[in-house]
Length: 165
Picture 1 (tube, helix red, strand yellow):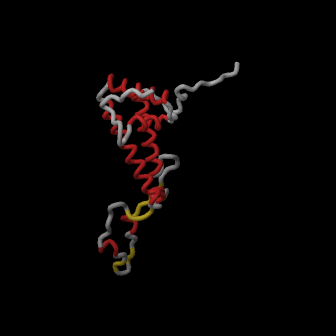
Picture 2 (spheres, one colour):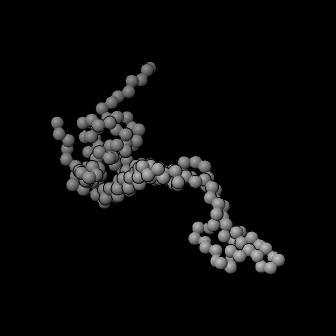
Picture 3 (tube, helix red, strand yellow):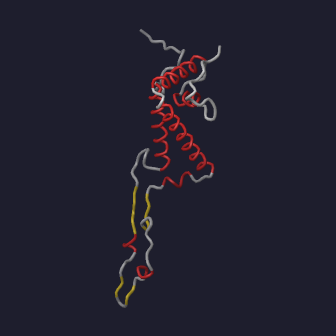
């Protein structure tokens, strides 16, 4: 039994929008599940064709963010965006030669305070670079699933639950 064809507005290869959306929803690969995802995607293309390119832009952004994050992990530099405290020169500040002179006869002054700054980031999932990336990816996936009418963690298509009475 073949799946219905995707509306021409959707990309069927590189990236395969249908498979990525199924993955974002956490749905297992099955004929029933793929048929339902296809129906929802085709329905969106029929009802709101202008939304399809926006969803595809979100998919492309997720791919870029995940690739960039994977590259940082492969390069072993992912942790560099996780600094909690920074103390040093203000970003973009360059002390002049005169500022670096701290003595003028018997008088001394602290020129470091002219250019120094201390920044502490907060706690929580969004307080680091990778935390912000993960929050953005999660937000984009939610937008995609909402646009086509799927929800992450929804019961699997063709599955059922047994309840005790």
